Image (cartoon, rainbow, N blue to C red):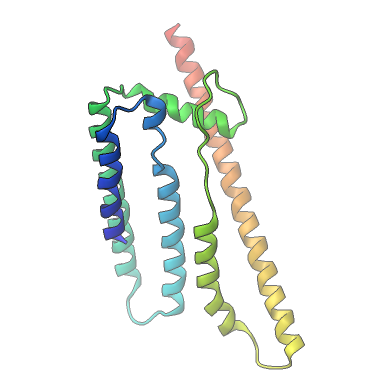
Length: 193
C-alpha cells in the first residue's frame, strides 16, 4: 500500500507543474477522498487480520497503518507546498476551500460555487463484500438450506443496519464540525471588519 501512495503522487505533481492552475483547479486534487479510501481499506485489512490472526499481528498492523498515513500526509504536504509556490496560491486559499466544503455540506450556497467534492463508494463497497464473505462463511451453521438462508439474511440485515448507523454517525459528526468551522470563520470575518 505504501508503494501505491508514493507512486501516485508524482503523477499529481506533474499534472500541476505542466500547467498553471487557478485556485479552483488547484483544489480539485482528490486528497480528502483518497484519505477516506485509505482509512476504509485499513479498517477492512484490520478486519481481515482479525479473521486470520496468528501470533502478534496487531503491532505490525498498527506500524504499517501509521506508516501509510505518515507517507500520505508527507507526500500531500510536499505536493501542495510545491504546487502552491509554483502557482502563486496564498495559504488563505485552503481556509476558503474548507469553508466552501463546509457550506456545501450544510447546503449553503457560497457566492462562487466551486465544483462539488464527490465520493464514489464503489471501491469501499467491493472491499466490504470481499472482507465479509469469509466472515459470513465461518458464521453460517450447517443444516437445512432454509436455515442457512435465514442466517445469510440475518447477517446481511445486521451488516446493513451497522453500516447505516456508521453513516449517520459520520454525517452528524461532519455536520457538527462544518457548523463549528463556518461559525468560526464568520466570527473571524466580523473581527476583521
